[in-house]
Amino acid sequence: MPFSHPLATQSPVDLQDEHPLTEQHHKEACDIHNIMARYDATGLLEHVNQHQGTYGDFTSAPDLLEAHRAIQETQEMFDSLPSKMRREFGDDPVNYIEFMQNPSNYDQIVDMGLDASHLPTPAPEPKTKATPAATPETPSDGDS
Picture 1 (cartoon, helix red, strand yellow):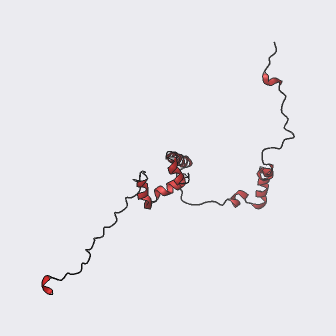
Picture 2 (tube, helix red, strand yellow):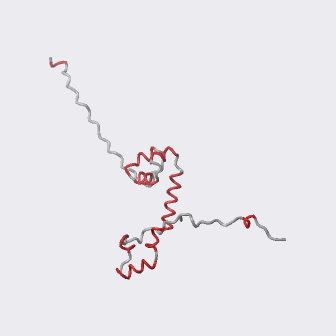
Picture 3 (tube, one colour):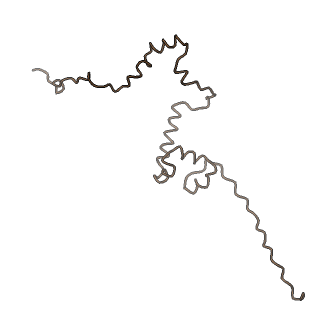
């Protein structure tokens, strides 16, 4: 008994006349032989020329995984807010974080029912002593 399979009877698809989905105009620029030939001629890699190095002390910066986790936690925290509140921040967690980190927004944060414990408590406004209003002197009974 011969083996039959439903796909075995279908004819192959011919893609010879189809336009490729990849961007072919990058072909020459991405060819390693062309890249190395330009390097041999100039002594420089074009990528380095286009994207200059960034130098600095990044020892305290989080690694990539920690940064992704922080972004994910921030997005989840923002998504847990009511939709009306998210709209107030333009549905953008960056606007929310900037607002929440600004100490001058302390009172607004508390009024919104959000936790402001990460900010320093604002100093109470100094109370001004009320000075009694100057009252005109009334003449006494014997001064007439």
